[in-house]
Image 1 (cartoon, one colour):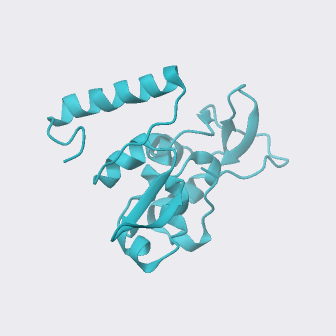
Image 2: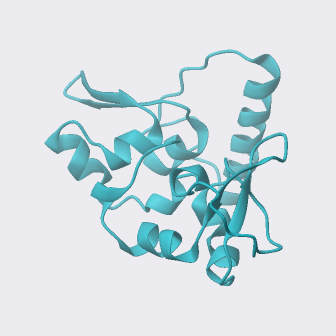
Image 3: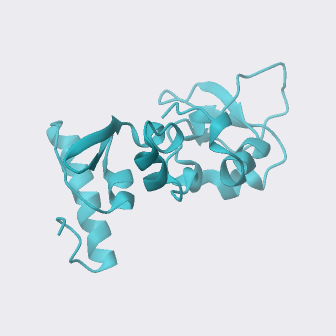
Length: 159
């Protein structure tokens, strides 16, 4: 049983939020063991997938999903929704000569699932901002559609 598995969904999310807050405040490395891959995706900077006591892959969540190193990891992650793992910066493009930007702005660290609806509803290039609010790229709805419905093999894992 994992730390939060016996909790109801609302309390579980609150505890996960508190865990993330404490991790940020303490600035310490924490080893968290779970059998819930969604929980690992939400809480982890790095994930280790084990089989028979041997680490099959230790990597970022995005790399594990997009670039599985073994057949076991591929099967383990084949049904993981990519939009829950990939950040907008993984699908952004360089700013070109375009000047007709959307009024919408998204953070380069935003998970695609959190901004997909807004980006898909905007026909213009959406500026992607870094932590200093500088435009570091643009994202187009076609790229988000590709993440939601396309193949893994052509995506990068700039997570």
